[in-house]
Length: 501
Image (cartoon, rainbow, N blue to C red):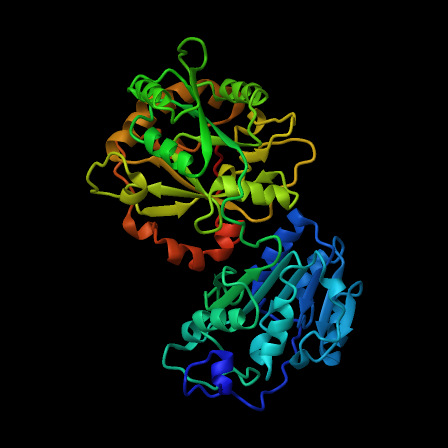
């Protein structure tokens, strides 16, 4: 096999043989900012033995972390001279990365977060470093590797050599995936795109995430999971949600807040069919107000009597998924527990109906394909699943967004919630103007909750969202284009509005 074949580059691609040496210095732009923000996010939750930056350059992007974590920088003598001034506390290891990591003891990588950002494209023999990194996938907690995407940066007809004189070669994301896989990385590593600099913010950088704490769970190894749902007038979606949970290996427990649209009758039928484990009404009689705090306190009490190992506080209008394709929630929670974590966070996607859309009922996952990321504070507090083990928990004080208990250890990678709160013009107007806003007033005044629909309070009708302001759902595209956002929430806009639903 010729060199291009070994490197999984296209036929006719020209590799630069004598690339210029690049010396990273403190500059105006921060390259790959989300790579380092992701490392910080993972470190905060996983508490690694150390953070190791391979090809660290100036070390500027690790400055904020040096007081909280042991930092190890691996680079050339010339680069480390600069690093020493920027990161005086860091351990510095001098090496020639063209020879890989052969001279470095693998024990230093145990339980570490390893960063290799924009390094492999500078090497004449990148396969040696790739092979050594692959050997760490069962040792290091996380391995984050980035490199420019040639096609996104310069188009499909570019056959090299790279325009950057310090680069020897550049891959497309598909070529990079094949190159890493052929050198020992797992085929199921996470692959996607991230922004190139904090200024340009162009998604032209390929990103790979691997390591023992993000490794794919084994199919079939599962734990017992129970979802507790509070409902009020969700007749058009509740059955879809329940069937989804059953497919995810989750048993369903529901408290109905005295629905008057037929939801209770549907739940009764599904209970008789064995699809719902338990149903009840709460409180003991209908009330004028939607008293969410009391419903959450009831959930806290109910959980103590459940035998399931994992519990999800689940909404009646959402579908939840693990980060791994074809891995159910029951399998994923089992895996997370084995890794030593006892709580799971979620990234929230709000799916919207659009202007002039025909009224639809049911099968919303297929019929509502446009979404936006959750953007208000309550959407960024989504720790809604936890390992029970007789813990005393607090759900109510956060409005149901953040399950708090002693000894909580949240799995670093977020799972996914597809949320369908407003599903058509008719459903949205009934939900907001009759079922929610009038009944929220007591807690809005007392607790400051339920402000997520403030912008609709003075409206006479809800016309829907503009297509141009939403993202079209396509699973494969979403998983790669929004890799960092979906796994961590990094890069998402946070508005000033509040939310408690």
